Length: 412
Image 1 (cartoon, rainbow, N blue to C red):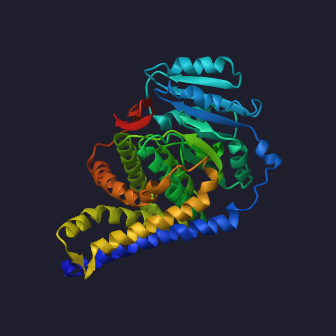
Image 2 (cartoon, rainbow, N blue to C red):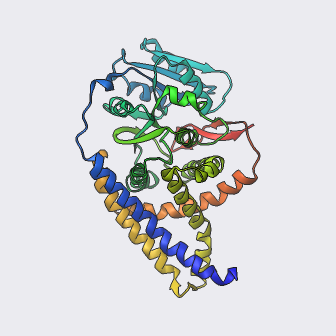
């Protein structure tokens, strides 16, 4: 009986989901834009609140200096900087201490043993002297008035975190340029849609500001998940706190520019997202939080579609169809929606890019996203379900285009 309905199920998954989800993202992004984003942003005296910048580092000798230099335009009397050297094996400690010598408002915390980004952030937050904490990566460069723009959202006492708008800095390779298209046509669009639901799937760990009392109330960051930013996002929201997305607060960030580096990053993201959904999914579905429930259902449908993608590829190879509808039609529909996403994303997000320089190739990233997502989930989900449980996530340093960057890796 179940087998008899399988063609109909496949037809729904491969024709409806790739159309419905992008349409939801597009419509939600437009609502966010017309309701809030296009309005002129006014900075008030509240934005002058003092804050602490946390920079967790592991083997960041090649990037940490540029990151700290990008903060020199910020007022030292309002901005405390804490760099956490998480057991680096290169010259990161020396670089950080050298930078701190000429900056009285900067402190360095050196950890002998590498304990992972979540543990480093927790120690830094505990050492902070301020109520508001801005977390950035050691391979990013902060832009303009990003801290003040993000601070304005904390006028609402229920707001626990505000995430900004990362821009891909390294665009010298095809992989790098495609990710510019991803951040424009997918990441920013999905965050805008999620904000119309009043929630976020994840804060961007590369640029996020927190209310210290809020993260303290939920026990800080989880050390047993691969993606600490997704974990803290769900912990805060399931505890009743609100999160905000602010596209006007930007930073430049280095991303993988090789296929190997991209695969490792996306595998980590997929693994971390699934870990968090497993941890919080049941309680979310039992709650009355409509926004989080819709985001969770969206995630479940996306994972289901991605897992069944190999079935469609097999059917296509053997020239079959699903309920009389060719799989090639589903692929064509996905391609059309990818083009529409790119156009809308460029309209909404293009103003925040220095220059797109994308050309025709970036149009295909939304389509490639579904492919990449499918393969990484195929590896990540069994790893989470059947792999050994770990107490904390430590870091390794993969090579991305000749520069060393930090990446979480599961360790005992």
